[in-house]
Length: 68
Image (cartoon, rainbow, N blue to C red; front, side, top):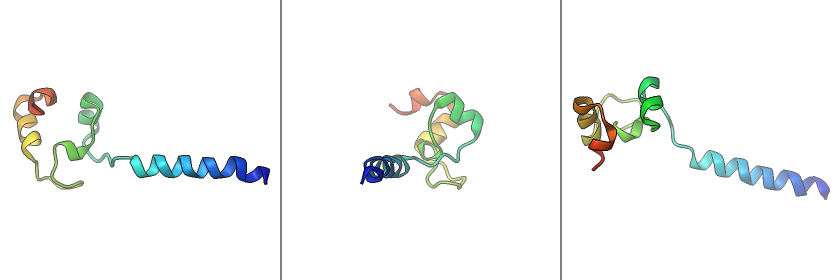
């Protein structure tokens, strides 16, 4: 019974963290600079197609100016 006191909350915590994670496939230099994942600028993960934010970022190199 004591085992369930520790394992059950740990399982729920791990499941919550895994569910809320966002995939990060963007280039490392952009993710470090902007602290965001690839879906901010790309239509789909692991694809080269850019959305409007991605096209704006390509021109201005400033994510804050493109999210407005």
